[in-house]
Length: 301
Image 1 (cartoon, rainbow, N blue to C red):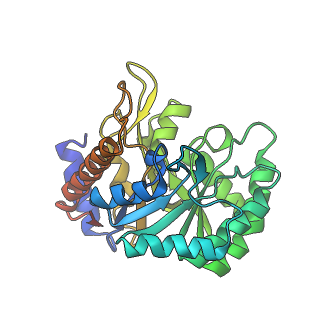
Image 2 (tube, rainbow, N blue to C red; image 1 turned 180 degrees about the vertical axis):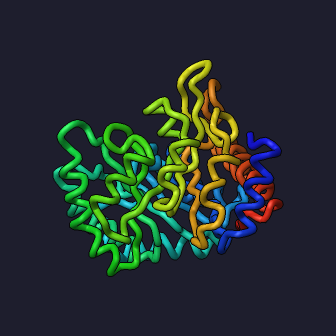
Image 3 (cartoon, rainbow, N blue to C red; image 1 turned 45 degrees about the vertical axis):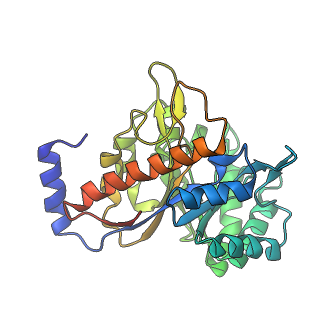
């Protein structure tokens, strides 16, 4: 938690800063993967969200697993899904690429995703890779190749931490420097930094916050066992996590990827997921209200 001295230092720095960040609290459909996409969307709306992020797979009424939006889906399909969300009062702000950046079909798949995002008016395409030894060259080459198309489409590709050569914010910033394209930026995943790298994300985010355009919200515990969880259930201090990006002047999605309680089984009902989605939103909204009371930010709950 931020101590009294840090809070006053934060307030003083913000008094000299520019424009507050506009945060958009968006629930991913991912926590509802055991349920149909339709039920995910209605649950996210009922949990008080105005924004949604698509991904990755959902079980339909027959129990079969299907993608929220397949890579092969048409642009018309993407636009129809976006209309479906907007008709429910949910604005789609992010979608998963679902194909690793170093995969053999990565470039073609990402170009299709960019076209889908453009058709659906989804501003952020979330991607990542395994970045095992020897794969970073393809990772960077593919990002460079897809960046001009993303720029033309008005889509920002956001790379998140996923172990290996992209395991930290500092590592991702080095990748972005090599790519050197304004349409490729970062989605910060603090839970993955703590999980994969066993590193505190708070010092790490200080090295890369200027490149951040979105967050994948999840927490993580290393004690009593290593496990991802919902925000506020883990070991990450979200007051300190958001502190560097309070005055960017940007509109920045906070996409809730993991909302679950640690150590206990996940809910067996969609209603149980609804309750955790609401709790996660309320927790982060509380953090942002607290920071806002020191002149730090605006947000939409």
